[in-house]
Length: 457
Image (cartoon, rainbow, N blue to C red; front, side):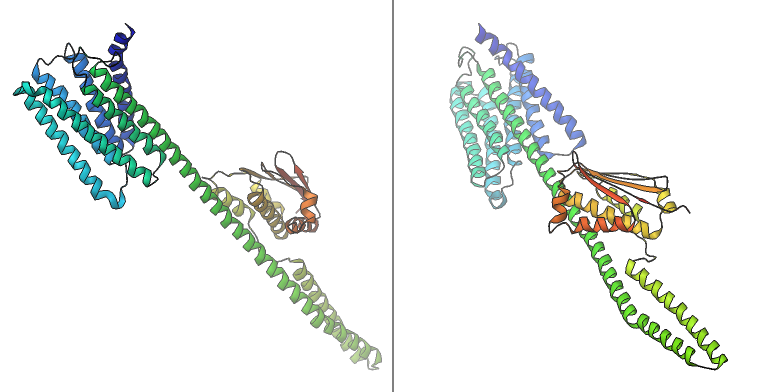
């Protein structure tokens, strides 16, 4: 009783599954042009029409009357085979073997078309040869099974993607159950309680399951490949950014070294010469007896003293790196946000933009720029974080800044004493120049907090 019930219900289960997949691919193809899915949907469409003819038009379902409708139903199932062959062929890149497989597919389609024509002839004109055609149908199915096996062997040798294995396993199920069904084409015969149509439906259903598994694996592989490319792009962007940061640091250090060299040369050369000349003129002024000469030498001495002060101030500016070149903090942070806008790194800023230019002079902005540059570079390079937040705000003539990431953190003392602690030393030197303070904390990542005073203008 259960076998009879299952035999009656299974075609409807298969029909429902086919309808769901057809609707899904119809919706999908409306937005994305995918020829492979279009071929598969067409194949399922013929399967569905065959089931409709058998279950809803031809009553009882194994009747051959009227003959025209019966032949139409058979046209649908043979048409499904033709479309399935086209679908299978379009799923693989055969490379240098393409002519061989193209030849196999053409032969398969010709055999299916001729087989259907022969079937119609035996049904209409030579009914006494129907049993003979049943044997011919078995050979046709065996040939199709052989084609599927050839496909599978080729894929195995070429180590093609895993999802193809399930795709062609579905083909094997489809063909095997069609061969089995050909032995039970009489309603009085059954295979473990299943009659001809249910056996065909089992093959279709298993093929559909294998196809969906293959599709799931394909989507998973493509998703992982997409993420791999995104990670590679992110690493490439990080590398470029770090190169830019290092380049700026090297340029700044080179400029500072050159300034230091020039300031030393001026100090050792011009400054000492002016000092020596001052003492010489002062000595001459004390030795001279002429009042007019004394006044002249005193004026020269005062002028030399003024020149000496100007040279000394210039040397101090060179030595301290004070110049009018400005490093734009806002532009730097904005470019970082744009650069990582579509990546896995979430870059957040919370900055009082107007106050930066209003409250900080060029020297303070430049020092803060390089502190932020070093801290952000360390987070990108070492922290393995996916979020960096930079905050800058002003209160009671003090500039506060914070750099927070959700990475792995680090031991400040250990890092400072190691060979790679030069960056931290530079940060400490810069904050000292600004007469400020800075702290390093590890709590769910790294938090760097600093502040320094600025004058009221």
